[in-house]
Length: 223
Image (cartoon, helix red, strand yellow):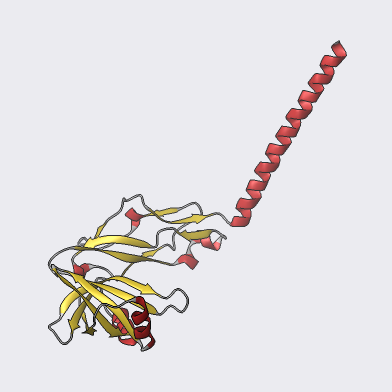
């Protein structure tokens, strides 16, 4: 679904700080961030962690950012850094945009209907190879995510980018043959087939060695 509305986010300006000061800020429930782009100077800010999470969860691609009660500016999320252990937001980067100019953004691919796929019911393994894509569109046309129904996939099928559907205003920044997902045979079956192939190779090698031995014996008998 494209983002057709913006969500307001009010933040407070802050002075650029080092990592120690940033850690103290986060301990008070605030997240440091930077907004840049749009031909203007970068602005460092701080925002309440819960407020930020709420806005990002409910917003589309575009957020109306207000710094120190100044008039709002349309921005998009450029990067969100989370703590590796507890998952809390460590830093946020926002990018100023113009609503009449196309931008590139990373969008998540969501696969639905996996449990109904014939190949999965037969024990096959669906591997989600590409989980994010870069798209180009006007800020308000950037989709929150791209969904695709895989309920028709069978064992041996490969899902490529050209099968995904998006509005005409959205352009994929990748080749049509980019692999999104594959549905492979059951792992136990694959391992069994590999084992049979290895045994066949060993039998063939043993047979060849036996034949060579017999040939050597025959040669000895002729002497």
